[in-house]
Length: 70
Image (cartoon, rainbow, N blue to C red; front, side, top):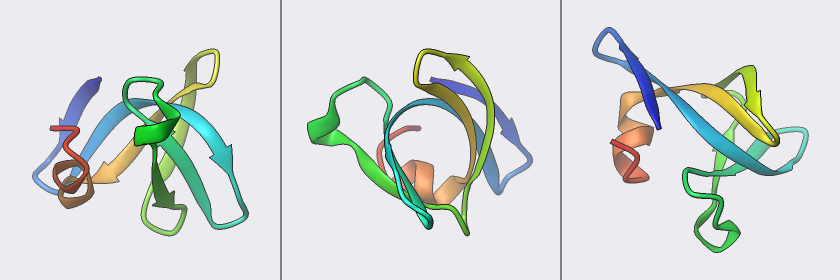
């Protein structure tokens, strides 16, 4: 779910967290782990929790487009 665009270069999304390492989060927009994508922590910010395993992420627009989230 797209929450809001922050200018022309970042977008806030609510995504489900499936896994986490020191350098990345594995997330999906529909809860399907088979379609989950890895997001580098160096490029994305995790925000407030929105539900069980659901978080707000601020991502560069090009990442959101590349993953089909917008």
